[in-house]
Image (cartoon, rainbow, N blue to C red; front, side):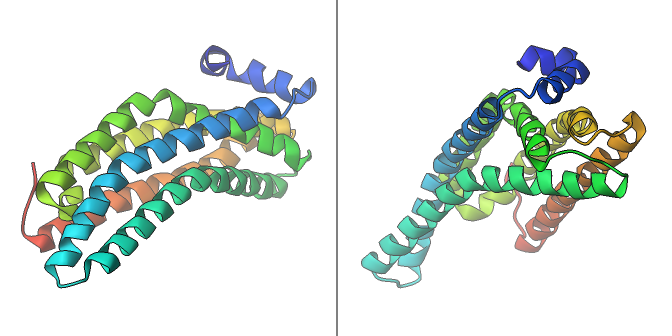
Length: 222
């Protein structure tokens, strides 16, 4: 599946739609991506929760209150990471469905959902790298505290990786929506490019915000 998406995405999505391949394969991709996102969230949230606990105790909070809040924060982080992927899947599919309608696209939303699900394969492929970043972040938090997450090297690595994943996803959206919504290659490219550019700008804005916060904090972690 990954090889087909990498070397022949046009043919892959054409067969997915024309031969009405089952939805369960796309659902499996989304589920795996959700689990891996939760794994990374668990790694970083464990260290963050401990740092938050120490900070609350230092500020005079009771042990019970500190434990309850940190456990709640950690649980919410895991749930958000898992279901965030699923919500993103449906949201992106809805965006592509709506944008393609502006270009006269026709086709079932279920097909758009199916082809969009495969755009999470890049997240799975780069998991070893995101896992390493999560481990690094956890070590920084354990050593320096929560503010260490503003480390410029880590932020930059995450943004570069996010943009690489996004570039691959753009290609998958482009070929997928072309067949799911019966668009021309030109129109499919425009439809896929709109959310891709928006997400890229958000990633860049994120690193700019981190640098500003880091400057205000007055300490750089390297």
